[in-house]
Image (tube, rainbow over all chains, first blue to last red; front, side):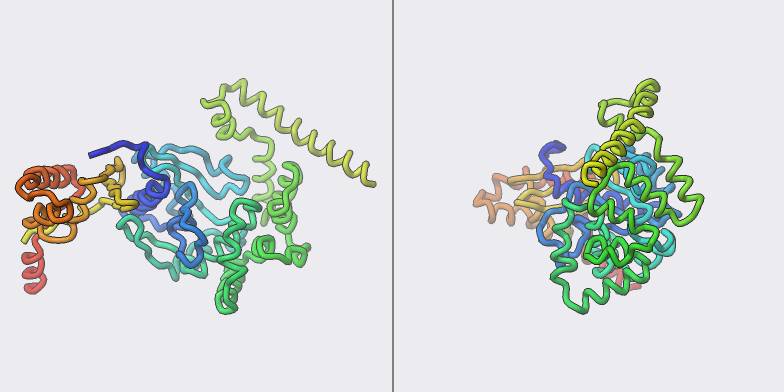
Length: 289
Length: 98
């Protein structure tokens, strides 16, 4: 009997990872939906690729409980909500046997509040068998919707999702997706993925999705995030985070936890980088004007 | 007649003739290939009493030569909590009483 970890293919490890996370969730009564990868309905998946990690959307009130339980069972925090992504939506854990899992507390592009949005997706969920464990998944139209919204912020990597889930979809399936986009209040990110983003120039999150889907400087992205915040408190939180050092990324770059001195040094490097981008943008405008 | 099945809380993936089984939630992932994978697959496909005969049939081995090894291997899988034994007749009679 071979207990070796190195001989397990990624596609197998991912499916066992889905099963492991669902098993823990069942034990502690946490609601979560498996999204992307092995959990996606085959009709929406153009290849047999299962991606590189396990992604789950967790009922927001249950996130803290799942976090504690994962840590108790050998899952180590790899990146945090605060620094793991610009949206602050996901936190990544790694496990010696099962690899990586991304815990989502909301899904970028959905403007409906995280709790009601989860309720909506949970209301017509299904169950798929992954490695012998029943895993809760969104309905097929909801899976397509999430893949489209995901494609909006993955300008290169996940564009391959679009042909299967939207471009080749029947009129009936498109209508189901559009109805869900309306319920979840996600029109701008949807347009960023499928076209017609300019129709939303007046929306507060228009610039954000334009930068995300088409690219732009770091400073342009942060300005767009402030503008997209739904209220002053959220905007202040974005501003407060902007100049902070991404300690997670710095740690992975260094291969160890950074020292206080290194964090301070990075603190000054980031604004300098932003000033450099602004300077280059000014020069570009000057050159073209 | 005793049957074998994956124990509760065991996740299993079969891919490319290899069986990967993990005790949840912590693992590890146990990799069974070759004869070990064949025994696992056959173990789930019929009564334990005829398991050695079925494995012999698919491997062209003499049942007398492999019976002890097959039984020993299955005992090990049960001891590790990957497989469990059940009695279908007892299950059915319990259901009938219920």
